[in-house]
Amino acid sequence: MTDLLRILLVEDAPGDVELVKRGLERSRVQHEVQVVGDGAEAMEYLRSAGQGGGLPDLILLDINLPRKSGHEVLAEMSGDTELSRVPVIVLTTSDHDEDVLRAYENRARKYVLKPMRAIDFLDALRGIDEFAFNVVKAAHAI
Image 1 (spheres, one colour):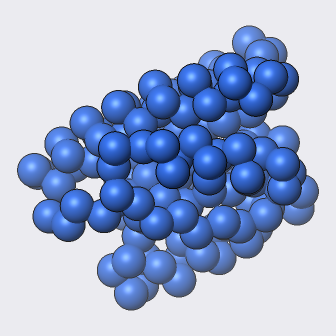
Image 2: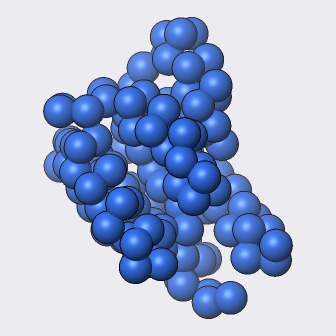
Image 3: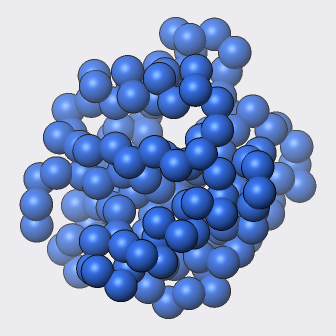
């Protein structure tokens, strides 16, 4: 097991990308972040990484994305034996019940609303830090 947490951030809003990166910089977990801006690019990245054995340890996924939505990404991942093992945390502004339910039906591990205030968003990321550490630690133990 490596101590480096490989994170794929799927986010199209540059401001949210910066908030996530700043929040992760405060993390206790050593990490590297790869950013893609839409769902189609995310699937291309995952298929390519999967062939080379370099899948991320964790995916932070927005639901509202161009070209291919986060829901479509989750559905494709849940239908793929290898990709379905990668934990996904949904980070989104959508609090619609159907979005939450659909995300969990497609194996999202956690659904986090992106608050409008930066300080609240950073607090949400601190909770993700602990979750990610425990999930990845357990995944590597298997």
